[in-house]
Image (cartoon, rainbow, N blue to C red; front, side):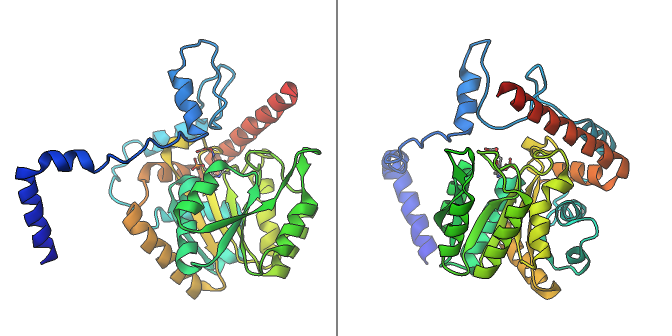
Length: 350
Ligand code: IK2
């Protein structure tokens, strides 16, 4: 009934009130402010200066300022070419890509993978993984908050805000020492209500580049455990901090050793140079397999009306590279090459 009345209204208004309808819907909408990071890229593209440098979004460039496609990715592309698979992936994405992602983060021989305790889905890169987790948090812990470091990647604010999760902050960077405000961080964790959600950058903290030492991670892990907080790791740069993805997963491994349940966002934008392919993974370590099955099914339920299922091509590249020992070895060399060059350039600049 309601539908037919609406149809009747639209039919009449299309005769008498077309002008009214077509001009009124969006009249009160003001232009949105430009994104502080991607807005710089827009300004960069519009600028005619031959000497321009883009200091906005972090994307790796070679000595000529050119975008880089990794050799392992080129080879994976050659192998994928002619692959006729263009159908929809399942809602949770490529099983092979997800398996390889879990090995990278949790360890090749992780007991949690063997015990099927990890609920994991392919995500729309790191941003999509964070957004999916934020929606999951909002759905199952609607009164919870997320504590985010000061400062953090600007988009974290938008992600949790748009998911309807309220945010609090914890101290992270100490401007005077240009290092970690470890005392402030520990105090803020201690003073947060028990059972709060904490967002942690697993390595290569954006924007400061300041990471806790291994010893500090151990203390952070103990504090989080003592307070019953939930650690959610955003790992957008695995391999970029030290040149070795295993080493960069150290914080996660410490939390796993300490018996935490964790959430984790992974991205292949930077470490495989797959920026525009939007390929990543969201995982949640659960108490047992039954819980992991339930959590995964709920993540899929959230994803289905948002984007239905993730894109195929990037997932095929990742699973081809990480699933082949030779290509994986090449990738590890290339990651190290990029990380060493970044570290070297920063030292020179300083
Ligand atoms: N999390 C952090 C901490 C990041 O730095 C990024 C990447 N930032 O640069 C790209 C941007 O500003 O959009 C991400 C997550 C997510 O990156 P992606 O969604 O490209 O994997």
